[in-house]
Structure formats: C-alpha cells, structure tokens
Length: 270
Image (cartoon, rainbow, N blue to C red):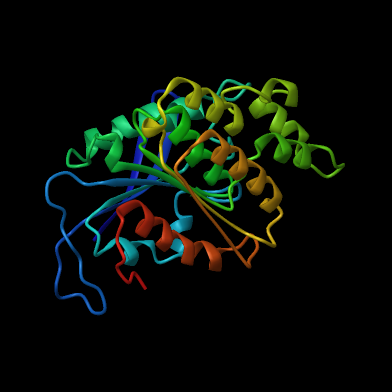
C-alpha cells in the first residue's frame, strides 16, 4: 500500500485542508504483509473521524492500512474539524465540502478512484458515524452505502445531551445547527433524511447501511431508536451490538467487519 499525506486548498471552505489517503499497491516482499493492486478503478472508502480527532486518527489508533492491503481499495481520511459534517450557521460549509468538493478533488488527484456510487462507501465513528450515514442518505448519488461505529445517529438527542448541562457545548452546537427546533426535522437529522429518502425512492434503491454500537456506550439508546426506525422504513440495515463502550479497541475490531460487510468478503483481515 501507499500512504499519502495530502495538503490541498478547499474553495468551499476558503482554507487549506488535509487528508491521509491509502492507495493499493501490488507488493510481495514486505515482512508480514502482502499488498494487492486493484483491477480497473479503485473502490473507495471515505473514513471519517470523531469530535476530538483529525485525519491522522485512524492511522494512529487502528491498523487500517494493514487491513485494506489485501483488498485493493483506496481509503480517504479527511480532516473535517469539529463541524458535524454540516453547513454551519456560522457560515462554514463543511457538508458541501465533504459531500461534493472532496470526492471531486480526490478523483482529480487520483483518477483511478471509481466514481460509481456502488464503489463508494462512507464510514466513520461517533461524529463520523453520523456523517457517514448522512452522506449515504443525503448524497446517495455519490455514496452508495454508509457504515456507523458508535455513531451519534440520534443527533437531536445528542444535541440536547451536549447542551443541557452547565459544562456542555451549547455555543458549539448552536453555531453548527442553530437551535434544536431548527435541527429537528431538517436535512441534518438522520431520521428526517431517512423518511424523505424512503418516501421518494423504491426500497431496492435505498442505500445499504451498517451500524455497530456497544451496549455500554452513552450513544447506545439513541442507536437502538434509530435502528428501529430504519427497519420500519425498509432499509437494508445490518446492525450489531456487543459488549463495549466508546473506545478504540472496539472500533479497530469493528472496522474490519465494516470492510467484510461492504466488500462481501470473509477474508481474515487480522
């Protein structure tokens, strides 16, 4: 595999941005790892970070490069700052950046990345899990599937949890989403997005979705609520729960399951 650290300019955000990109490479002489090249264009996973992190975190906390080395796929890990993959009320268009500009830039920089929706996955953890499902539901012409690990899928409840305590993040969340009434039922709420897409597309055209959350996670109850809603709407949903809370030892293991699910492979990625 090749690992690239890319600094580039975003016209949408009006500032320099960063992403780490893994590209396939055919190798046979590396100790303990064999790289596989891709035939034709690369399937691509956009792998999103959570609230406290940046584009480096998946490299630092997991073995993602090793996991994908034998799969022949590309992985894009962008920094998106603390903006919940949203066009914020303070004027920074992070949603437009990640849903429109970033895929276009990646495909210009790396022409062998596939532009087919079925070859493009959005995945992420926590805030990034919310962003991944949002991309699959709201930008489904670009992102053909979404995978959430410990995602903030019930974003309205997470907003309330984050803002209704004295030490909370009220100013931050109001700066991103406006007030909670503005968020509820909007195109930034997963439940509303799911309702709208299901009402306008036949069931077979709805994006497949994956989710995992630990039973000890503070986001667990919100995940159960959203999963139940998605099942009632008829989405192709693979949802899993197991013992665990909000930490990397679980996400390192579960990102392997995401790859198996998306690529329909039973390879031993460990």
